[in-house]
Image (cartoon, rainbow, N blue to C red; front, side, top):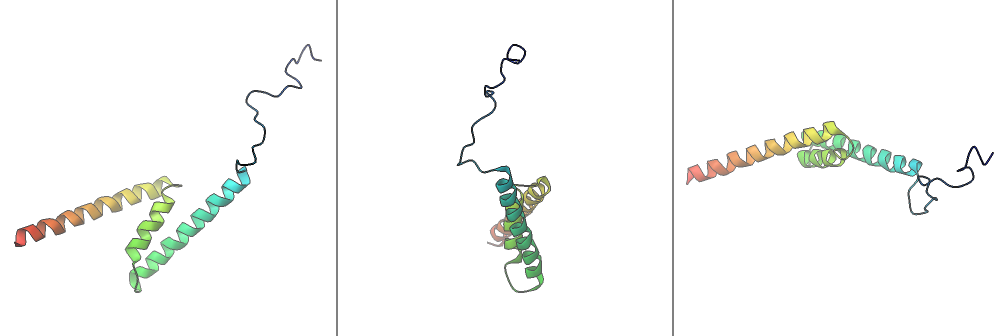
Length: 100
């Protein structure tokens, strides 16, 4: 048998011994799920704060920033929010300069 399978019994180069500091797959998925649930909760709270007192837009941006690490749609939406904020800031600063 050793003649036909010379690597049998020897660990492959791609197989690494289990490192106790490396998180397992289940732990990584659990952390990702908790992060997503936290961000979705923030997003819902931000939408609620748009009609109730509170910093709704700030919380929504924070939630999108957290979600952008996991989802492309959140990253794109966050970029659109950033561009809109820059445009609004430019509009405000140009109006102030024109008033003087």
